[in-house]
Length: 175
Image 1 (cartoon, rainbow, N blue to C red):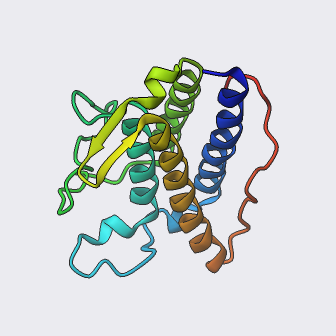
Image 2: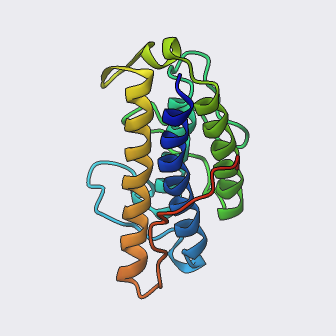
């Protein structure tokens, strides 16, 4: 795959991951378990800041593989996100745990993009919500992380926390 295209994709992913990181770091402890919306028929934890960050990271990690088959998140995280009706994690994940997961995902994302070939980009990826090429899944993944970062950022702003701007300029180097 063309080096320019790989660099261009990374230049979009890195600010998106950095935005999630800065947003998580900006979250004060008293809002870490704050609910962002009414969950109605789902567990209340699914709308809390920590869980939304975990959800974004879990799927970032999983989508970088292109398949659910054989995927396991690193400890202490559980393989539970694929189930619409729970279960939820047995405990609240700490900011430090999730920031470490984010760093691992950042490294993996960069490596995945750098190793991308045309054949790998065209590979069909099937999930419960549909099928897409791996390249299309990368773009979907980027949008998914951005969506949840913005949700957390909005909650922080609504609670008087000075929130980070979306980074627009990044370095070309590896993370």
